[in-house]
Amino acid sequence: MTSIKTIAVAGLLSVMAAAPAFAQAAIQEPGAFSFYYPNLDVLNDGAPTPAYRLESLPPSATQAYALRESGLAGTKVWHHRVRHDR
Figure 1 (tube, rainbow, N blue to C red):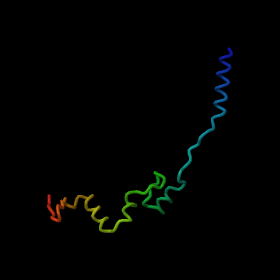
Figure 2: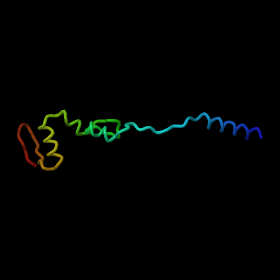
Figure 3: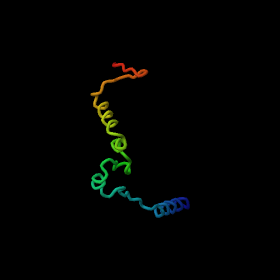
Figure 4: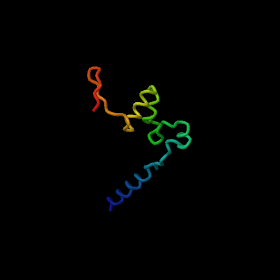
């Protein structure tokens, strides 16, 4: 009988000692955050997106990246200052 009372008291104390945890929004207005910071990721705590990293590059690098990703740029291999088309 003593062991049941001990278990009951231990269970009651553990329930009373446990503080409730409530989820809190990291960003209260995700729409406003996206409006003011279009190239930051709302879900990853404002981490920069790939578009944000490209902003610091010159326009020629951005255009070359866009051409390569779209598949419109051909593959060219430079070997000792001579271009070979594949």
